[in-house]
Amino acid sequence: MVNESQGTSRPNTGFVGSSSTTRSRRHAIPEEDATKLQFGEFAEGEALTLTEVATLLVAARAAPNVPPAPDNKVYKSTAEYVNEFQNASMEVSESMRTALLARPGFLNKFEIAQIMYLRPERVEVAVALIPSLERYSQGDETESQLQQLLDDVRGMARYGIRP
Image (cartoon, rainbow, N blue to C red):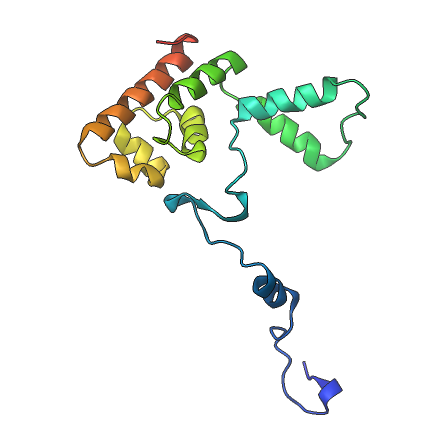
């Protein structure tokens, strides 16, 4: 494309003055890298399991004076996905989250949600699925603590109660 407004035949690359360039100058968006627990603009957000999302969808629809659920493909697909893949009751999810939060600062909220949903059996599997957990795969006490948490979560999921 030729930039005719300047009377030259210089190609217009679309980069100079583009909204993305202007936006990045005004508001530097933090880098996102889940393996380093860097979530950019979502860092302050909450990480939910599918069970928690399903509960919120139901509660939102049951609240007084709330309009009916949107009648669009995105909402319907989301609700169907959540209902099909949620894998624990809300009570079990609350027990899991409580157990995983018992050691403040040990796990990030993203890691907690992933462990609750994926329920890895061993630390090695957890690290493969959730790379930020690699800091606990050094064969020390923290690895044993993570393994105990994984065992607790799997027990809660299996038996529906706190182990």
